[in-house]
Length: 256
View (cartoon, rainbow, N blue to C red):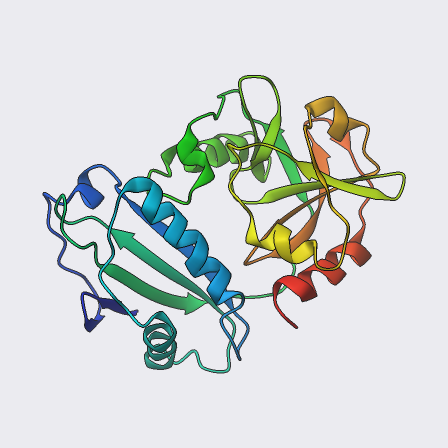
């Protein structure tokens, strides 16, 4: 993989400072974008969310022309005209110093993933950091790994009040009686895929508990890579699949 880091295109390994707070403490942020073979989908929205996370962590980034750099990373990896996952990281190397960007791209298969089975996570997620895509990502990774070890695909995250937040990797949407809704919480990551879904569906935010999902006609998850996918089960509760809605929203997320 050819990456761009600190102004250079590098093939293979990178030199990272072992004393960097970004490496030692995960003091950094990241974004994951879908490249549909023509454009980086919702690039400006991703950059705006990244900027808010940087501000929240008090990080000042080095200047970078992201559109030009990411286009060149795609080209050097032979991904022009192909679908790809693009990652943009910004991590602190020294306190008070401008934080450099790391830009990467890899092939991504856009074929629909199978309907997902979710397992409620017993660990509560309630830090204000949950509202930003930071490199302090261990709670999400571990929640998903625990769910997968139990035979599920992803973990459903709750706060201390038992309110639904999201899954470890995606936003949650439910449908009941022909109406849609998504969880409302300041601790939930502002989902760009969910914002894209709202361009084609009316999806108000409302407080949501497990019993609300259990009473739903359909449940969905969405993120920038997979688009929207149906939830087949939450724990032992099974849901009918709604591929038509998923296809509609996925086209919006991927700007097709």
